[in-house]
Amino acid sequence: MNYQYLVKAKAALKIRTFYRNVFKKYRHTYSYRNMQYNIDQAVDSFYLIEKSLLRRKPTLERWRLAGWHMANAGKWYYAYSIADDTIVIEDACHELNMHG
Image (cartoon, one colour):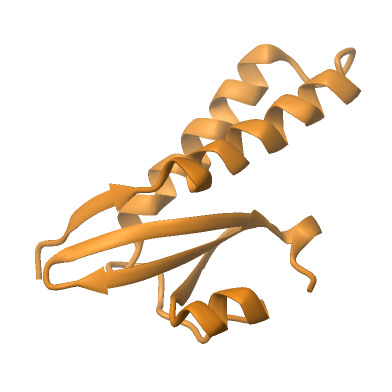
């Protein structure tokens, strides 16, 4: 099936904020170019959901209670819903923050 993808601002913001904070903290060893690359990689993974990223049962309770699905790509976990032919990326969480 050919899906349309809708990315909620919250999901994209979490990725940008995470890598911006890494850049601020490790400025001498983590370059702006690395930050942009990591952001692009994480965002590009959105478009693999339901294609090569398998649907999983959410491990975060708030995602489970919302009735969302979960997919994992590398160090990122994505919460998403499906409405007809549209996948809505609702939230994103780095593996370091996958608790509660």
